[in-house]
Length: 83
Image 1: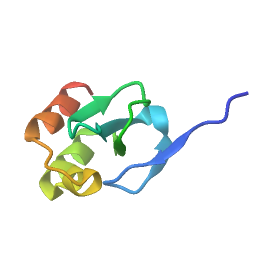
Image 2: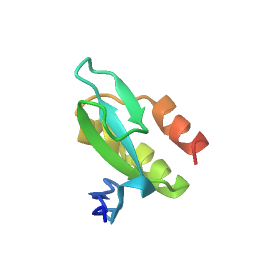
Image 3: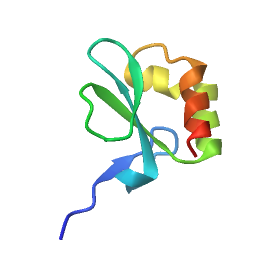
Image 4: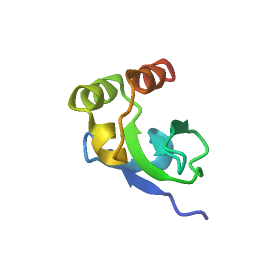
């Protein structure tokens, strides 16, 4: 039996199963990508798969702080379309 992998959402601080969260990564090349495999190298941050949470993170620029880089609004818009 596999152990469930838990991660914390940066917006709500809720601990959830990894598959209930989006993983956003700043790669070593300073690109920001959405990681659907949960395996890309780089600094990662997790956001709940919820429109209100994504909009809160966009408003407060939480991904900018967590990934230590500028994250464009296109990333947030892409996450909303993937819900």
